[in-house]
Image (cartoon, rainbow, N blue to C red; front, side, top):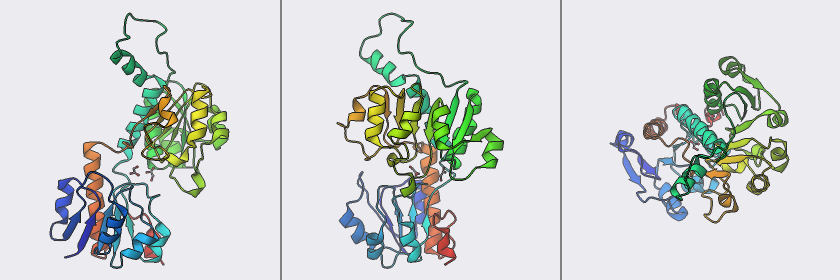
Length: 323
Ligand code: GLV
Ligand code: GLV
């Protein structure tokens, strides 16, 4: 019987697969306080963690008996993978199961911001809807335009596939060209600057690393079209929030829709939230009933493999197995 730390309540259908282990779950509806996290990991053989937990050298230092870290997310920028690898600890994550759900959200955000759905809702709720008005809340088309996708992993490819239904041309930028996506979705590789200049709308799906910090800064925003909508479905710090505020405020770009922000959560008095052309939602990319269950299930499978010293099936630091 292994000792398991779970840092947030997970779907009971997934949690029940941990039966037979000594499980301690943080049951409050907020991130585990750091001191408690460090204390608890000291009593754990395996940890099932969230993207809001910082898994760094300090955490690993407290986790003397830790055999596996299993994160219920695909992105692992909160985890020091190199430190885990040095200590021989595999890190599980949850790719694939959330890809399509997250791509759906990218399109929901793009449509909402480009076509001004939140403003329309506010207008109706505010009692302003008098007569039909031919000039009311005009937006910009998605159909027939060019979509630019920054970062071409699984989620980027799923976003690209959906562009077909909108008769859109797709440009993409990533570290390496992806011939399979070019074939499957008709996407065309472009340098980042060219992409920003040519795209009518831009969706960011890139992983966040030190190399992609503020990838979308004021110079990048300057290249975009004044009619362009920017969607960030990846990680907040890919976009410089001050630069974005300036670009939106001066209408150098049309709109932004952010599932993720810097910082996260975004304070309610943040300048971006004062702008009608900025739509912000609280990191809901993978937040469907089915997908969150699938993520929890996968996170549990990764955890159980690590506890049994089997190879973690969805491992974010596979080099841990080839030292
Ligand atoms: C969510 O942001 C994830 O990385 O799964
Ligand atoms: C990243 O891992 C992705 O799934 O796009």
